[in-house]
Length: 150
Image 1: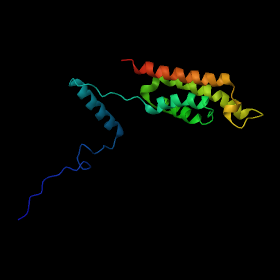
Image 2: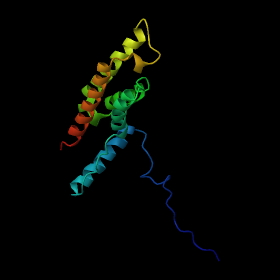
Image 3: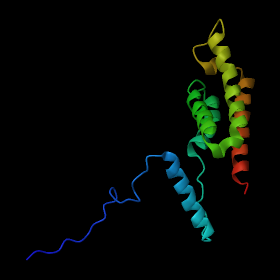
Image 4: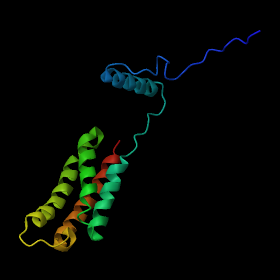
């Protein structure tokens, strides 16, 4: 005597779990599901802030003031890339470009200069370091100001 097998649903073979060949169709289906949830009166999903952007924005002035200005190129690049690629951060693109320009000026002056110091931090004028810190604080302020809008 054998025990009848119970039907199992494998998440990889379930038709709803299978992605379609068209990624646009998946996105449309997801948007439709979100709209259905909103129409039912449920709270819409809360969009999480971009951690990479805000951590990078805080890391830039810390690195510049802490005499690690050359390493600050990494958070500046992350900040600019994520801001340009993420549609919901569109309002921050000018602020990110301003911070990148503020960082690029002393970097270019250090790279092009005839008598370079061994590090960017030693070659950078304190006023340029202050401009980078102010630009980063302005970006952080704009980030939190745009996030609070309905």
